[in-house]
Length: 525
Image (cartoon, rainbow, N blue to C red):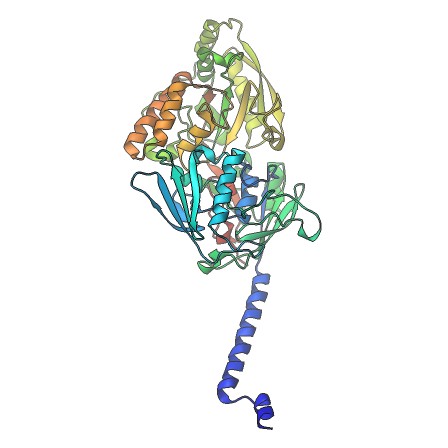
């Protein structure tokens, strides 16, 4: 009797525990409902093509993986480096050993625990696949796991940019043994291989339509900040004008990489917040510089520089929003690394014609200019065609869809193989990344097929030099080589142009917008 009575009528302490339990249960239930009631951020962009985290390189591909996966360290929009899956790190005095301490209690989307084995697997896989991440990491390193929460990297030579490689956009950490990450499967587990530790979980994906994510409530980062979204939708539009129209009509909340002509039309529109940030983003107009092509001759390369009025191109096509540099990838945003004293070839069509005559083209030169259909580059090609016609350079323009243009490198009309083309390069946190990726003779994006031993030596020297003044002096020498004999023209360094609904709060658009951190975002109203 007594025991049954107590079971139905708890003592005062027990009643308090019951009441507290009910309050806790109510709070948890309320929080869960509140989380479900949070809004979804909708972002308009082009569709991704290469989904593998170690290989995809353009903004939509990086945005997809940035949502799902975490990095050991995060490279912030101001190029500073912050903790992520690694809570701390130490660099040995000789610069050859990097020791990372990992966060504890982190889990993958499938519920499995994150450990040092996952990091070792990820970075060894980057080497096996020849990922672009190796341009900053180098391939001559050994990664090891002394214990479950420690990872060490041992380098064969100092690398002043190694941390930027660790945090590069291809280095999202995979689960140990992930043999086919980001492969769409069948049935209820169709997206099981999109298995990261990141803030969002992929729940639906159609390359012709959209990617849908739900917020990962178990993400380790929510202990440091509060979630403002219940999920994300990346909605795919190949046409940048359609992306802007979707923003104006309320179909999406944010778009990036807006062409200048469309951006001007958004200024002053009620409910729309234009975003403009200075970056190192730029188009590259380049000639093949290897044997069998006209650009093999430095005189031809110089003729193209004299034929191009870069200041006028900036005024005409970007309404003066860009910054004209020195026909090399070192932008003014890099501060001390940019040589403001250098003098460039002035626009001089007659000099261009004279140089072509000296190079063996007395009647001028005729080529096909290939361009992707993005960022106003077809318009750039058209204006170039007009400028160059006065400088004994006649071009026919071929426009390719961006997703096709950059998708492969093994066809004659791919961006990597054409004789004369325009390519778009997104922002990089440091100039060294451009140099090792696209201009070192072994660079994975060396689309000019340019081999210059002096340049290679200087790029390597800069990579091993941590002192800012010493590195700036090296970059000044590199800029001089580009001016003297480089096979490229960089008409401007463009700002990144984007726009959001006025309801979007906390969005800091990254100079490379695919790396924008949406965990900081909320929607008002």
